Length: 41
Image (cartoon, rainbow, N blue to C red; front, side, top):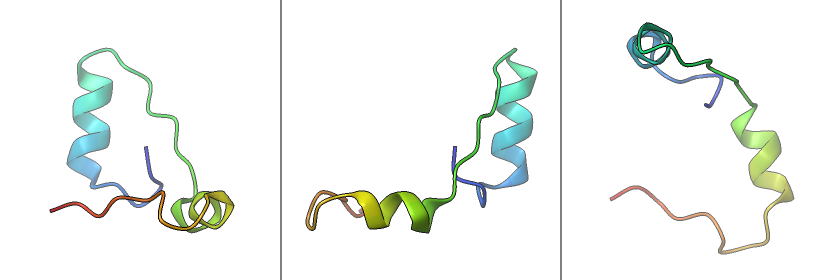
């Protein structure tokens, strides 16, 4: 889950018994080939 995900999303994940493993979105995006990130529409 992105580090900057909404707190409600983190809490809901934990509330359902899940583990929220965060990552740095910009750092991950730099490693992806151009055009591989799809924008949310």
